[in-house]
Length: 184
Ligand code: GDP
Ligand code: MG
Image 1 (cartoon, protein in one colour):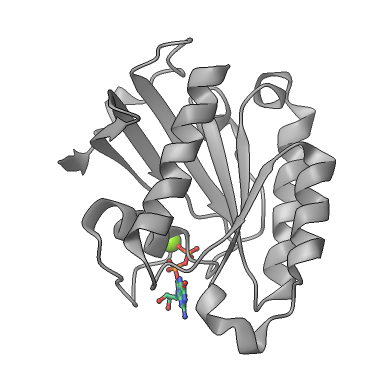
Image 2 (image 1 turned 90 degrees about the vertical axis):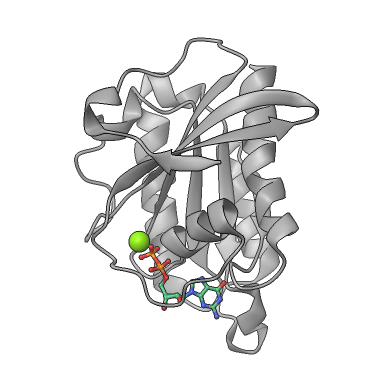
């Protein structure tokens, strides 16, 4: 079950609250943030999505047999990290997304990770670096090891995924973010 959250519900991150998690997706336009969120919430891949949409969705999930209210913020930044205040204090975890077939989107991830590492608050927040569009392997521009190295450097989890392939793989990534928040 999921729904949209009204803007007035934009409170600060639930402090060590085991059954709530605020997850923010960041990354270059076109990397597949919205497609991943829609897949996670509906099990469907929607190929065309308004890139300027910035919304928060709420979904009641079971992660390791424990309920959690997972709020997911879809973001739109035209030129990399700007106005970070709108999510920094709210987030309990981040997923920073690039497309494995787009080197520039990987560079944008690097900028996001640099920016997040400058904030005292977000230093302590779990971050997943996520290479999307794994189905486009034949057009790959960013090697898996390059992704792994960047993740290691910033202490992030790292996965490669495709928003248009298996739902459970996508679900696992969102659930893993919840697990990491619980471990904090
Ligand atoms: P956003 O700007 O980061 O929110 O990116 P979108 O979710 O709008 O996706 C940008 C484009 O990439 C859309 O045309 C999507 O259909 C496409 N896309 C997203 N994820 C994948 C994927 O895993 N594989 C492929 N082949 N296309 C994808
Ligand atoms: Mg989008």
